[in-house]
Image (cartoon, rainbow, N blue to C red; front, side):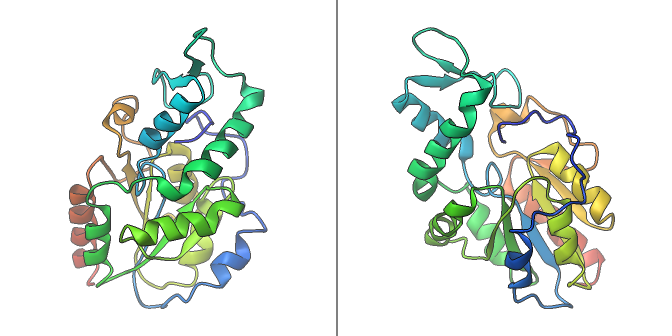
Length: 234
């Protein structure tokens, strides 16, 4: 989940930010080993639950009327939404204050540990670049110790750059439909999982059109990935 609407945006779905390229190129990827590229917020990390705790300290609350933050974060005193222009600073404050303490999604660490016996795993997250190391350390401390790429914008270009180095199945997990669509455009053979950990958010969206599977549980995601790996001979 992020501050944008889940409707497909105008930017090029195949683009990749220049700051992301060296992060990907530094990865030690094994060409013949399947890769799982996973989003963090609402896939590995309980983003909304942590955000709600932070908003309480700011006199705000999250009114989950739609799958977006802009327009849904409101003042407890007046009921008025935070203005769009104020959202970047609010989210920057949240990431600065809470990135280190956000809890992982139940079952994520255990499922990835088992899947790592057959795959290589990369976390591709739209966290601010300056919060990358903090996010990686927080995940590692909770049993998710894999490379973390701080991305900006859609994720298709980043996934394609990784996929070009891996001659094996590619799996992508994200909660944002337009990220999934961009990966579908960028690397059509990928297996795409629409994962939304918070059940309240999951009710707001149906399955992303360009995904192959939709779930709120890591046990189900693990089963899907395991079956595809077996079918592909891994």
